[in-house]
Length: 144
Image (cartoon, rainbow, N blue to C red; front, top):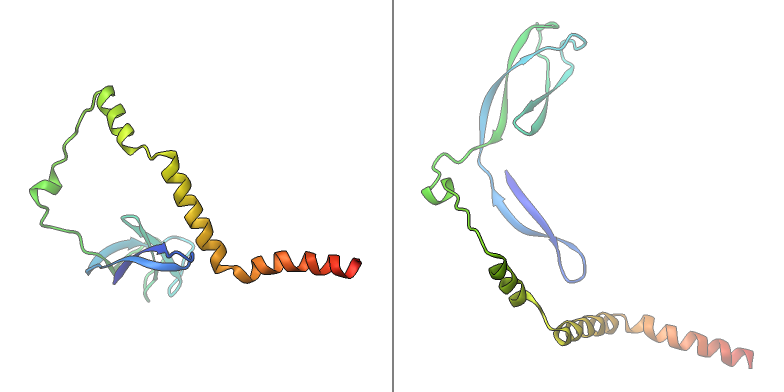
């Protein structure tokens, strides 16, 4: 089984950004049959944060319990020391202000990036731009 994080390319098309293989393991779950469900009908169960739909086996009536095997993602058992501990860092107001100032992008850089993006966008749609200019000129030529 794989987990896929999705992203978009420069044209806005959906592409897989990150793919990771997830190991699955069988887990046995004890389920109580609800009163309104009969043999063969599906029952919704929740294991962790995932929902599963399992059929009620033959010979199980309302209120009885039955065991079912489901596949769930394998949990990491070997957690490294760095993963197990978290550290908290405190910053003063001046340190935060200094970090924000480093993140500030000048207006000229932002304007240049925006201009180049729009120029690239308009270049890809040159036929549409030509039609936007030529159609009104053609209509004016017909009128006069």
